Image (cartoon, rainbow, N blue to C red; front, side, top):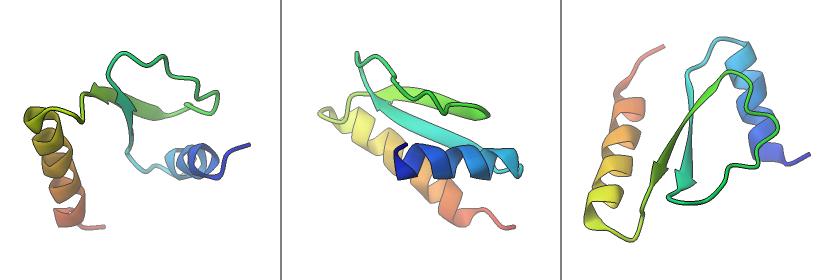
Length: 64
């Protein structure tokens, strides 16, 4: 098992909102996707980079 997908699954099991960022056009192979949402983004485009930066800013700005 890969550590990151397994950790995301555990966090989702405990109620965290987990969003997986996939490459645009890549087929997701995460068998531990239980409880996760995912988005596909083209990180080679400025719009894709901006979208992921905005998502990260929202996560950093959220409180527990």
